[in-house]
Image (cartoon, rainbow over all chains, first blue to last red; front, side):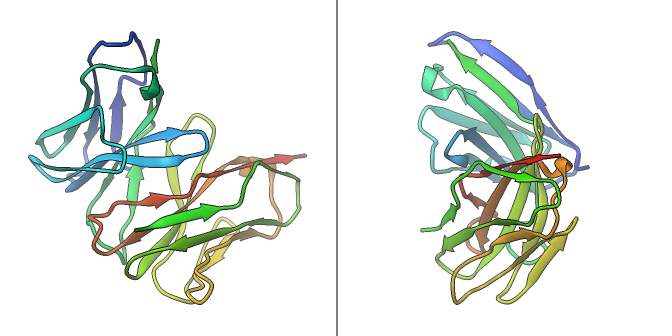
Length: 115
Length: 113
């Protein structure tokens, strides 16, 4: 199994509070991704990183920011949590950004509830 | 842009039944296609993939064939087991997308003994 951990695994927070989720990898993969999973929507990309300090927005980036100061860590921050951000968040990594032998590996997920 | 459409679920089958989960896609460029599986309480795992037209991906008795003419990548298994109960996601990537996967909405499969 790819070495990906997410912390915390579960969190309950109140509306308006800041929240940071951490993704840590031991594979030295270049690319890292944050997705959210909601019923009926599959997984939707929030932000991704293609190297240290290189990040870009995905399709549902509003209300989220990210940072990557080291290869192994990718942080997702909700500056002011809202109930619509209640979801399960998955981190993923990949060695390359192309097709062919490409594979993306997923972490175990973080269940976030905003009350 | 890219999009993936899966058949509506949930799907409920008896053990040893035949499984088909339909997946169709639209893509800019030439996509690679994937099926991921998510067991209860876990993250996603790659089940199989195909990178060019007419390729067949296979794993654990599951198969899917990349059909460019119908833009489809249907998942099949000849005889399902209770342990196959999970959520199945079809997904694609194109070469210019920094490895960003586009997912379908997922299909819940429940297999009864």
